[in-house]
Length: 217
Image (cartoon, rainbow, N blue to C red; front, side):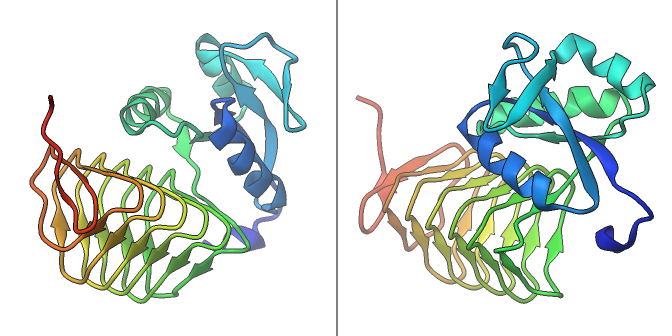
């Protein structure tokens, strides 16, 4: 269904009230499909973040669902935390809302999962695939045929060339570059500004130009 052809807006909650949530809230407020009700967080009810009030905490979610709110977006930058909170929300039968900035460029052939956030200036090219709960942050470029897994965070300014694969829960630091055809495993961390020129196994952290595995001291 085209999100902009609905008869009326659907009420939406954002789970989280940090810096990432501030950016997501601005995208949500620009989206005609959703009416942003407020934030779910541990802060006191009524606390306002970037013009959006906290309306409850995790324990309130079931009551919001009973009140007819069906859509939620997990606005948490940490991959594992975001995945865990999404499981909780799904267990309460919420729908995970995907939020895409009007300032992003998304190919018609790109595939975007549930609960995804795509920020302003991001580019998704032909046949790119974005898994559930992934963040494509400000100004990140994902070229053709890339396959991005579940609950990944691609930080601002990253560049992924064609046919790159990124495993679940991986984090690509600001300004990282991945050359064509490289595969990153699950739970990989790529340091800010790194240039990855070869495959990285699951669970590894790589830094530098060219990127190399960083061993613990």
